[in-house]
Length: 489
Image 1 (cartoon, one colour):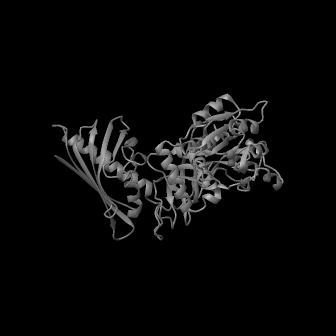
Image 2 (cartoon, one colour; image 1 turned 60 degrees about the vertical axis):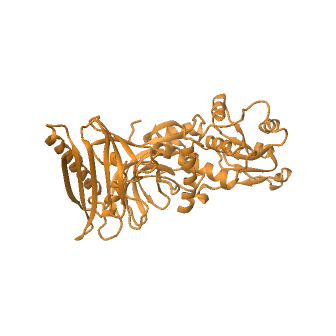
Image 3 (cartoon, rainbow, N blue to C red; image 1 turned 30 degrees about the vertical axis):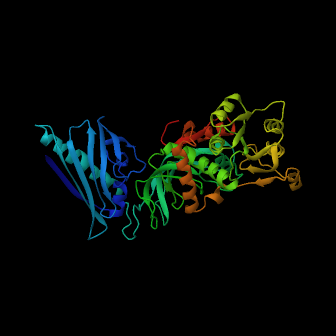
């Protein structure tokens, strides 16, 4: 057997270094030798027994199993179970200890393995230099200089970094979305700095750009949904660490950027089985569908549901989830192609524009009863039709205005159906960490169970955000649209 042992001191607190290393499947985000990695047969990266299957930059495949992990001692052990590199019976142990003369970390990394005869020195040198020493250097480059030694936080960066952002200089059309170089400040108390990997595009971004919603004051950056990696953590942040994969769907606006500094309280870690693109494409939409179906109108089996725009991001998820809950789903859309997508998402019937009004078609499909609940994101052009399509004591949930504001209505008109009207605000259902945890837990469970799925219909370079808005407003998209930082237009 050959034994290899290396150790070093990292000029950063043990909490910060351990926060990176304990993610057993996160080495592709920091180790230069690892090109890509995925977790096999486990939901969590700290689950003992989990196997990471990864490819080295040279093309070799390796599978390693987590044997033990202790947050108390900041240590873990793992073994190679299959490898293109002949490191037979390889078992390794990583251990961290705090250095007593400052906020630094002692890191010990050792292993034993059985190499082929005659290759002992070659493979021992490969492990020592290309695995261990290279790993030390990568972590050191990631964390050194990012810690605020006077505060007990981790990953606090001292200076600004350069990034790219879409700036709205004045409210208006898509042409106001212009890419500019910006300086991204270090995080302050309760903040984190992120590198975005994917950014969601939603109709609320259009409302912010036009000034209909008073969330973006020019000059400003739109966007409320993204996924990325934590670069720095400010004082007082305890639930996130440098290197964490995270997502968010919340104000303040500012997601249309390659990097961002923002409050950390509503940002959460992404499960290993949810990709960055899936999170950016689906978080806001899935969270919206969750509170619409479980809080605004707790849906009951056998209720009849009418969903506008059933081929879009939120509408598609409403169809999937409502169908799973046992409701009868009717979609209302604009084309045969979108009707097919709605049926695939769970709509039993789909209404298209024609000589017969929407409300007449709903009444025909329901035997004259009408819909128990209507989820209407269209607004001005649909509101009157929706009122007339309701069942007695029906519930109209108006949660968007793609065609414009609903306008002024006489409340007396509601008495003809004894109707209930709701106009929910996303922020009121997601304004505390507890609310976000409850909603995202149900969303991630629904994704895992296949109750809902995220369809990414359009991937657009961040620089082309204006095109993404034109397509969204023109209703020429299906599924979700995401912006990708760093891609050329």
